[in-house]
Length: 113
Image (cartoon, rainbow, N blue to C red; front, top):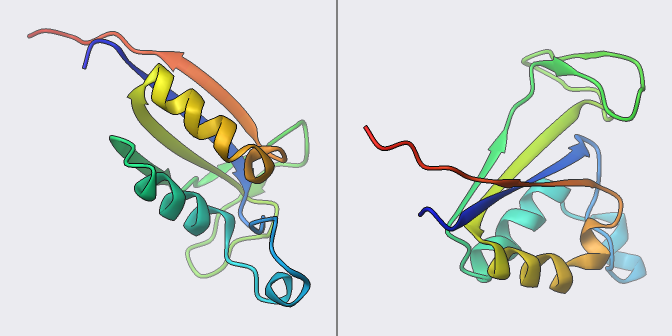
């Protein structure tokens, strides 16, 4: 695992998956579900979708989470862990889906206890 990296994807709760036909756009799947399914199909090592309790993206107003409903602009983060080459291949393949997100690639260091 020492050569693994982490890709963090920042997006809004209300974001929908892009690249569908007109009729599918009417019922487009949520972005987090779509990226999770595509990451699993790509056989990436680990993917986690974090529920953010509060925060903001791109200097916008602070969004405070509520257990029963989230504002469509509420920030979300998905974390993908695998080898850098595999993650970059995934990003290239899913470029159209990811273009409205913020991506952060983090080099990992394993702690040996």
